[in-house]
Length: 365
Ligand code: UD1
Image (cartoon, rainbow, N blue to C red; front, side):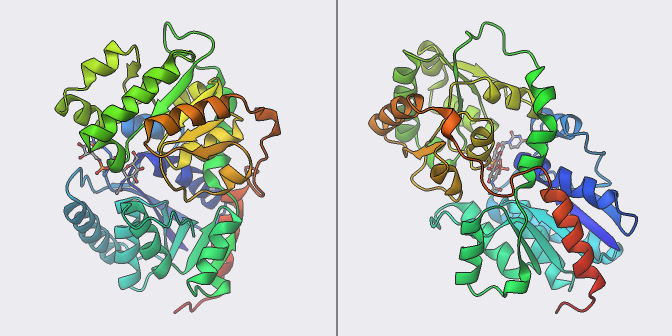
């Protein structure tokens, strides 16, 4: 059974690694790892492959950056060429980035079944490109692997047949549990005091508008008066800070701006932090399992279990809400945070088992 696993952007790597590993443990599978090249900087891509012990990709498309249409079209075209030249029995895609959508679409049009890892999540906000990517990918996937019960409910509401929906847990948490000890052994950035918070920001809605970004910087400055903050800066955000003339302001406010961190360094940083302020999706989940409170700088989350479990609160981009949310999350006892069902390190194995059963059963269309 020939199975291709597609990765493209930073948050894909940790979701794909346990699936690839579990497939490779089964002699029934011959796997191919495809990297679309949506992310390409050393610290956005290669550093992750190393940290995760992922083998070098078998095929690289090197699509790079571009508008949504260009990037998606490039991955679509390259995926089609690859699948025509290398027929596959199934394609695995992860998460909600442009590469996920494009590879899934190319495969299903060639009548190759698609398995979507992290299916069913919905923020309800169609202004987010990720929301469109998720919905389209789920609508064409033959197998929807879901991380939390809300995902099952969304897929059912959208009319996805029950046999396509598989609640398997969270492969990103498989990777976290597998890597935690190594992450904790990593040194912290020089000069960081023992009690600190971590910031990450990259959503276009937060960083592409000067007024919004400046407001967030002001809120971070006020949080930082009681909790020193360090901030590994995403390349999109670094570009915007420079463009808006805000980089020096951020430094003047005392924020510790760092280059993007590798997987283990970042996990080690979050694991020892007292608070995370982020607009990332995955980090909300990782921090919950590490029992670090999170303030999410968005108005919605596609990961409601992180809120239900006590570890996360939505603050949007409003400076006053961010300040209030930070104070309230710092007052919570992380010992009371719950870990969602099936976030137990075995999701990759469940997926490999389900893929094998699916392919053995034959016709799927
Ligand atoms: C992408 C995903 C987003 C995910 C994020 C994680 C989409 C629509 N967005 O957003 O869901 O949360 O990755 O990081 O797929 N750049 C570099 N080096 C790189 C990659 C990007 O400098 O290795 C810069 C380029 O200027 C590029 C910009 O960052 O134009 C944005 O990159 P892109 O992949 O388009 O979107 P992200 O903001 O990274």
